[in-house]
Length: 460
Image (tube, rainbow, N blue to C red):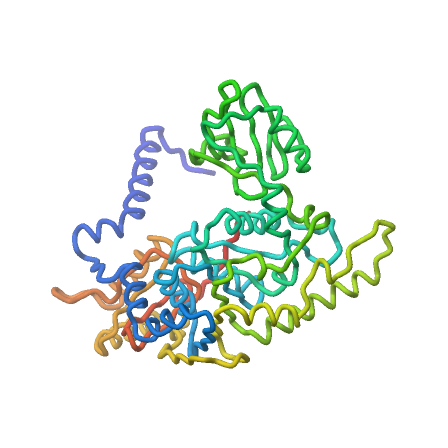
């Protein structure tokens, strides 16, 4: 039987629980105010140090050359994302980073998003689960692919695109046809709602009462809602007569505004257009001076070859009466892939190297030690780092994890008066820790310290 608790007592308990939650969520901020946490380094400080490091200055200078072939050796953990982010700060070009598979690409994507901002990083996934199985198309992936193509086609050049072989083996719609099938709407311009409706129907959009997914539009009086394949959220275009009065993106579930805009671009399902129009490889679509990064060039080439052969097998086994385009029209083979990528500045990193390098840069990184949740051992390690002149940084995605670590260390070894902090916390999630022995920084992750599974995040 549950004990009886008077209403007044319930109120007191609820207030105390609320206060406890507030204390927990603001604990790190309170430490900062009372100077019990020493924020010696920030994310920006670390990126600045990386950008000014001799190895990265050499890399940056090399990548300004069109014929650069650079090998990065002894790159460990998430240090590759830090190197890419430091280059991004100084070389204003499109960066295409090719990882071994979707999972590895997703973790790299998350690291870059945290370092240089989500608005500067795009994910380019595969649209099919298997070649020629059009019913198996992933609509979320179609949206992400279209977003990348639209950003490039509308002139955004200073971005990072993260991808993997199965995505790059697929060809894309040409720039000419994408431009031809793009509707731009600007605030203040005169355009009729009827014209917009006719264009959207021609693009294959479906007219509905309320938009909930890409490829839909609705009209209610002087308001037109359009869910383009190039944006995470639908657009709401409001008219005064035949003039566009306002444009904003909104959440299709809550109907709340996300952002006010001065213009928007509407593009159809590029995968459907791909079956009807001319097509080209992704390397013909990106800017000519883009920088291509490979985690493992030969592995990428093998998977491109495997993907093309799967498409050939699937095509030969087709029993549909509907005519299908041959693999050479929809996919790229390894010979064409190799010929095209070698026209770009290239960076190869990881443990295996296949390309002839013009420059080899060797880093002095060490992996984050494994502590198996032995925090006494961790405490000794951090103190040893400080004695050896290293700055300890612990990356975490939640303030409560930082506070938990402080409490553990206080229980193990109470801090003495005048003693400095063991580490600097940074509220940022990275996939794998590392030690930069040149910059004298030990970058640890909380999920590795607690032996906790670290899940990647992709747009849903």
